[in-house]
Length: 284
Image (cartoon, rainbow, N blue to C red; front, side, top):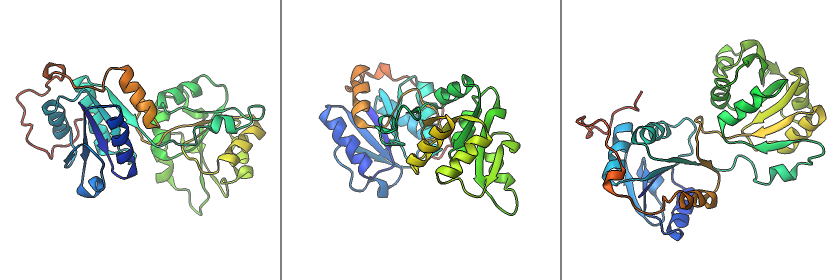
């Protein structure tokens, strides 16, 4: 049995349709009835998601894998799923919307700029660690911080922020890079502004989690000889992460996870604890 954690919307119906065509056994979990509205086929659980409630759902339904398609970055439910999957030793698969069009690497002229997609924060950090030169982030603070934690030399990491009469220290601290490397710019939205940031940082990498201004980012990077890496926005790192349902079901089939499992395949945890408390916080 597969458990799909969902925020609702068309994405839920798409996952349901794909799993149904793959003849998978699955149930969906929504945190509220509004998210569950308009859902396609399949059994549904609605309720607040916590570590204890999720662990109980996994045990009672003999869940063999969790598919987390929650779209909110740094979501409480996603953290619960990470902890439960680790403790109960079952696979966790993250399904996200594509950060950029899948053909971005071929859309760019390889003679002018090198670019690619890496949804692994650890993979992005490894790229930084193996590159001589600066790395500029055009990314949300939470994503920069998670990647920065895995980088050996944070002095090589730079973040531009909008210029203001007073430097926004609180915002700068959220990125997890040295304060001196969070620099104010009047404009870094277009090609010339991005190129100025890259030149100031002597950057060899431009890391972004947004599809906005793709052509400007690629053009600016090509002008200064930097590589562009597009990454994801969840705020958590995942071993198994996909941006389309076709790749998801291919992985499930490859791992033999489309069918049901025996009760002995789903291990109990916290034996003897009060698992009826659905309001418990995420396990620390």
